[in-house]
Image (cartoon, rainbow, N blue to C red):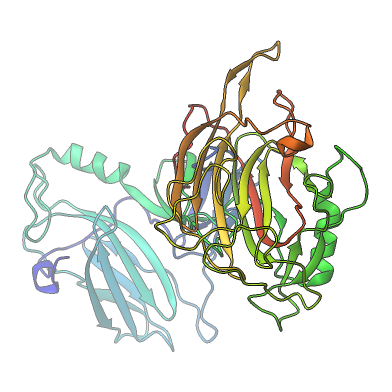
Length: 483
């Protein structure tokens, strides 16, 4: 940043019109998300520092058209300030007794700020910056009486050369090139924002009406309990809005898994052990049959490539008071009260194990233990938590690929984070335990048909909450990315 002293030697004059506040705009473009490169509907697009705003449609497109709408002061109308021959003209009024002038470079970097008193009742001539033979390309923001205007300004004191003010290194160009540079420079900027995406500032030139595609990035993703749904995700079960809302969500988004004895959903809504006295916080409680598969539930919405977040809590035996039955350090015995068992089935056929296990990080789980891709791969680390504490699986899944005749060409791929620690890195999932045979854990058979996420019931109390899924399109056989 240049100091006021360094910049006190520069004079400014108007370059063919104003920019930003007070100007008429006709801008258009399209907003996309970085992950899927799909249209972002409902994004807010607005002139930085102005009042002009637009919202993207279902195709992600916007048109920002009109003026920024300057309103006069309630006690005195006054005209917009302007530059002429290096002099800034500002009209005074009853409440307009001073003007603040901020200077910015072409890239928008702040250079100086100064306050100037207005002494005349009418137009005041302000020598904003005395001349000392230096050129200036940039912008001036003038604030007076609560209103602001941004002027694009160019002063060529030496017609054959362009030299930035202050300590910046000079660059010799023709005055014609200098003027072309100034015209092509950004006349202003847009702020583009959408829920669960990173806000972006986009600069535009005075002659740039079509801004093209504006791509919004994802914020750094939380990979643990409490991770909010990312942009574009669909929540399959929330649990933070009370029992009635949870029951409605269960009824609207899930069904009894119909492989064996199709019936009504047997999962229930129960208290959240983390918030036992908060009636707004509830959970989805697994059900009652000791034989796996008979009381599972399946999401109505099917998925292929996807990003999935599931939070679960192993409670042990069922208890009428909905309290936790704590196990010992290694409680893998089904006859003990702390034992629990369930599973998350990706596409209703690839099981991620939920099963009581040691909390000793030195005891590594096997291929049928907690966080395993069942009978396929063991978790590479043990980050298990005690009964009654919430845990999270964050999964990136790429579905198997088939040809037109139904022949499998590529196995499914899975990467997974367990409580924020990656325990599966782009596994080549073969799902050996899938199929309709109940001795093989009741998954759907391997074929091109897509199914929804499935939650298993296996005779113990396991709670679920904050389950969400985002559809992806993963071109390469790679799932090891964290967005």
